View 1 (cartoon, rainbow, N blue to C red):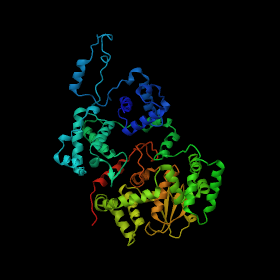
View 2: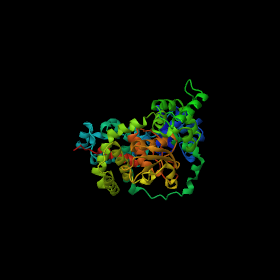
View 3: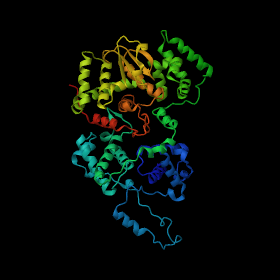
Length: 528
């Protein structure tokens, strides 16, 4: 643990403004390379850091670590020690005339202690109302939570005028560790992400608000100055997004007693099942036993056209669910349905009772859905409302996920030039409620033309992103990440599935998703 903290400090000393999630990614990369102490850092090369850092950042780290004395723990320049601390340090600093021989080993340089290590969260100074909520393991109201954050930040600012994102994240971790029941990011008992992201975000926002009057405006760099990022290959960036959330992305060996020949035999056998009644358990076993070959073809860039011909069951519920389970360790359908039962009603209640009064687009979507739904009820109807209201909340357009055609339309009759290239659900009917059949399109090719429930359609659409190495489009990033974290229970600590955009910041946890998770956790309701 001490070695990990020293490495984290060695990174922060050179790049003090590096986001916490990037620092964690750098630490993980260093551990993978075998760097366990700060003394190992001098052997790190620039190329080792390029998958997680920009070239200039990597060069700065490598240059600093190459210097012999760079491993002495030094405070991040973002924060200066208080005046009293500076004066006490000056009293123990040796005079210029002191001889190295007569100076103590540490006398030649005495670094200021890292303030964040010694910072005490002022729990005892919080109001009685906040303390009562925390000690009774109740979630403070949004008003009390904001009051707590304002007070904690005011205490931080007294010690450090310019706390970094790394600092606020560390304090958020401690606060959540002390009172997890009251402060953790959780919906109906399920911890979202690492549990402290929304609190860290609120602390950082408060710090930025306090600093704003004293912060001079800085002219934004021209896009041309970002050209150094072009040195990171697209393949390196893509590999991070492709493996996001996966536990078995590239299996190393064929399972025993499989051979290349047996894999081909099973592959051909599944093709004969397509147009006949088949046993789902048999297909599931065949998909699992040929998973190695499927991943090899997908990771080598086989086209959707070829995959749909060679592995037709990969695009059907039984096959995709089996592949998804091997890939992520999550049961695609079971996990989704369990989370809908657990969280769906709370989410819909929040949209209807709270969000519709705050956002016009949610109210408009709600009125439209009530008209389209009519008297129909059931699981799929609830899921339809949930997904469409989610999209309205995040202001993400339906046409990026749904394409509506006539109820009797066949796959070959769909005008594919109007369909997005990312996984898209073709709705055969005037609305999702009226449709009895859905189709799944990927790369503007219909890969499944007979999906009989909306719930199955949503699961197949979402599963396609993982099984086929597809990145979340920017236009759907919030809806897909919310579904991923809250309904498919995929919560990686680092990275993102969102497609890389040079002009847009991409966070490991989407701030808009964090805000909704926090609002839902605060939302109290009872069935009438």
